[in-house]
Length: 107
Image (cartoon, rainbow, N blue to C red):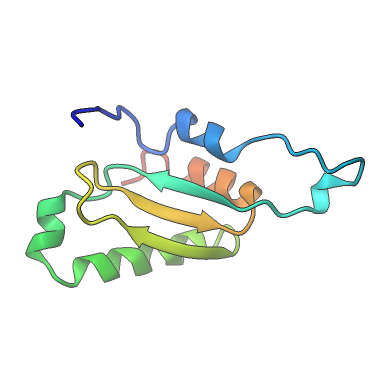
């Protein structure tokens, strides 16, 4: 508690999404490896509490933008997180990497 996160979808997060995978001699370029991107400071918790529709609207807006980059499994607004976190789970890490590039510093 009290930990500060001085980044918004930064390089630190991309290191969670980018990793090597040993495919046992197989061509790993054809593998899809799911990855979750953490978007920080997307909202203030007070905003979510003040507007009952904001959570679902934000999930829909983020999903609409992210699906342009590739297939997603889910978008979750962590409404009680003090740093305004939104989680986006991509079906493939390559699309998650594109998301980091697109979303970093956007909102």
